[in-house]
Amino acid sequence: MIVENPYMLKKCEIIEKIKETTDTYTFRIKTDIQPIPGQYNMIYYFGIGESPITVAGKKRNIIEHTIRASGDVTSHVDSLEKGDFLYLRGSYGNYWNMEEAKGKQLVLISGGLGLAALKWIKEEAIKRKKDFKQILSLYGSKNYDSLLYRYHYDRWFSQIDFRITLDKPDPRWKGEVGLITELIKKAEIDRDAVVFMCGPDPMVKFSVIELEKKGVSLNNIFVSMERHMKCSVGTCGHCMFGPFFVCKDGPIFRYSEIKEFFERKEV
Image 1: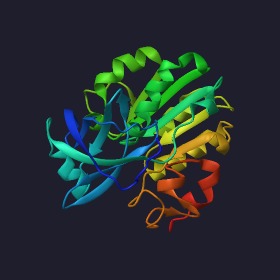
Image 2: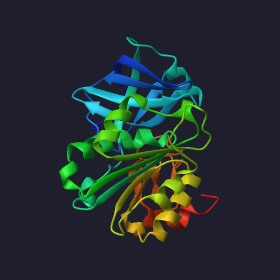
Image 3: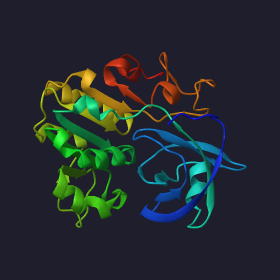
């Protein structure tokens, strides 16, 4: 979507609030904003500030944002309820390009809240499943209580190769245990696979190492980097990452473009 006025706020109604975890909620919001999978909106709370949040889904004029209370803005937003209004501007940034994976294995790798950044593209890929050799989705989370979108799991398990691992399981968990890199090691991943990934920096770094061992090209690994974005239009400089503005040039990058800067501690 092209934003005519990038600073214009739109008043949007919350039509549903879904509790995901103790500190994370999915909001279904009525709006005329028309994002593309991978893009983000700036969510504004008057008197507090604004925060960039990836769009987690869209059906007609309803979009989804999954928000964890991790700062002043997100904590205030998470206190809102159905029928309340919030303010959005957007959508911004580039998008997940499924054409890159056409005819190939599409691998979706997410850690923690990073699943929110891949949820919508997962749903769109499922709709176009015949376009891909296979859809493999790997998801790592800290523990059972931190799992997102549990109400979708049965459907995802039936539609694609969807695998989950927990770092710290409890008796309720009967699945894989360990870091997501263990799932990558066990999975059959093609050398020409196209990978979409989002998660904490250490997860991304070590996942890429395992993917390289399987022969996957860094040019075929795409990473969503939602970090330090303030203005969303590349003017304030808060999100500079090497030569890139994450807000404007991203948030999605080929890993081959950012590897040099990703591995520098000071960037």
